[in-house]
Image 1 (cartoon, rainbow, N blue to C red):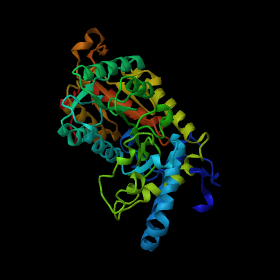
Image 2: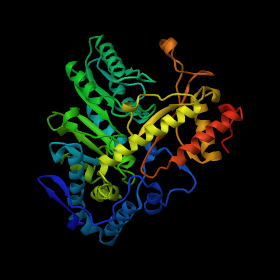
Image 3: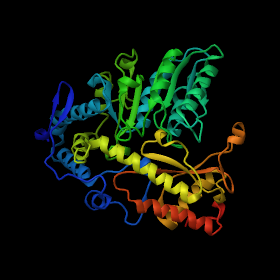
Image 4: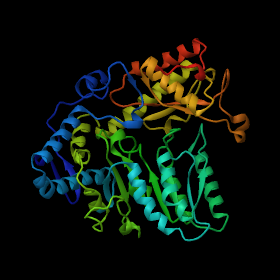
Length: 450
């Protein structure tokens, strides 16, 4: 691996791989060459949940695993840490961090949240101290707040994310209201948690603007949950300006599960008090080193990151070209579905990345989370379509602005993803499945999941 990579001033420099260039617009070839392990016949339009890992990366991962098994002592003492540093340097370059020590590799965004929140929990000292976050924050984040923060005496203000949403200004206005509410009792906002791309419903959030507002309003610390960001949107952590920023590399950056990065801004006074929740003999040596060894386990997902750079550089435009293609295609497919069903998108195209929300026909009667789950399971089992379904409860505050279909109120949405392996036929299959269910006059409560 050393012949293909080097560290220069803490940055990763990849030499151009002598590999066959891959066409970003030829999913058939990619399926045959890099994703043949995907289940045949299934329309996988849910890359956002678990990502995808190309076969060349899986092969590289297996090589790392065998290197450890061949001589584990040599691997531990001589191989592991310098190569983890190379992986961290890749991430540093990708996100424009100012220092390698700002980047730690962890299992996933859930682990990163535990690291941040256990530190933040110690800051709550007054009865009116609060945390501000969106109401649709990822459930694991909410549970982490419960585990580390509310039991320390803090209160939580949930900001309603407007959805469907028409502009950044709508989100900014709601966020300002949430901060004002949090400060109205005379307390201190100790932490704001901001999604870069919300999970469900999926919306690209104006994160830089929200961080600026937090600074203006005297919020102690800002944590950006960007689980879906790397490989999906450009990231510049210096421009964003948050104290903490986490993103999963296995969702949109082709890494095997499970690996994420956690960025901790060095100028933040709390960075030296951050610790991994799994305590090993590296405790006290700084979070990046603590995270590099949490006991004997498989570190190969972290070690293949330089190989992923080689993979994405085989495409025209590299990762930027992939991101642009995915955005273009998911918008195109979202519009196609909305036109077929007589519905609409959940946000303007500029407020999505590689995922987009599409309203479902109201005749499906998605009236609860259970209905959404039934429809999702039915699509998987009967039609071999894998896609998430979202129930949006009616909101009295929206009044006449409630989203409507020609047959009634819209309470069901789907979140479609696009990744390089997807074909237009995947989305046609989904379109036709929904149309068939509507034609059969089936509502969600009637659907079989077997």
